[in-house]
Length: 279
Image 1 (cartoon, rainbow, N blue to C red):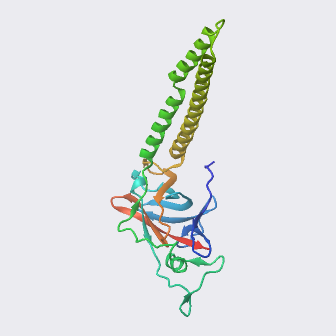
Image 2: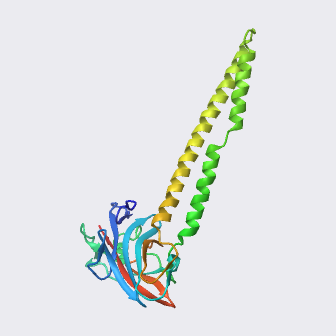
Image 3: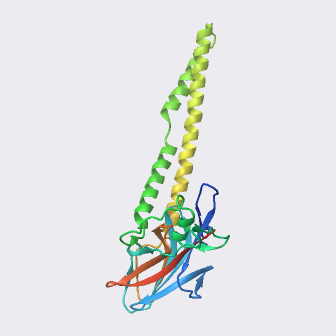
């Protein structure tokens, strides 16, 4: 069972008079009536390789799609996720006007990026479209980095804090040495201060180690999630298929997303999606 994601996403758009919320979503540009786990799929084929693509969710800074490759040819096909790319586009829909005044949308009304910018020009700035297609993220470096960071934090969490040991031992030795001795008020206060320092340091050290261990577990879980669900480079023999998540950069002010899924020998499948926003 896949890790649950919140479908769709929320783009916060503020103005001086109110703070509306525009809800973003991505769907195939053309209805296909092909579905997988409640998500409509865009479908295409090239050189006897069938591809299917569906939108999964928004992440901070990324769009998540699920891609499927089915090799119906008689030759092997190499699937490389980072070769997948996305070209954002924008519709030049004019805003709705009442004379010279821009009419604000009603709840549930869908807007293009330029229409949203006309209503909330300060908050919804329309960035320039990228000059080149946006490539998908290669999951392998991220998996390696997450794993290395998790292992480093786990080692730090398991390491003995010798300074804490030394402080505790010093405090105990001072307490033992004071038995049977008449001490001045200053000596008693010094031993108490040493004990407090040792206790405070060890409590802080234990808390840091616990936080490091928790963070290590979180990073390791992220790495495991990518290893299990991300689309990774693979060779498909004839008749084989693969599916997995593809991560692309977010471009919230795009209206259209043209995704290209390479197949082989320069051939590929172009699948179009539209990014909608509504109040």
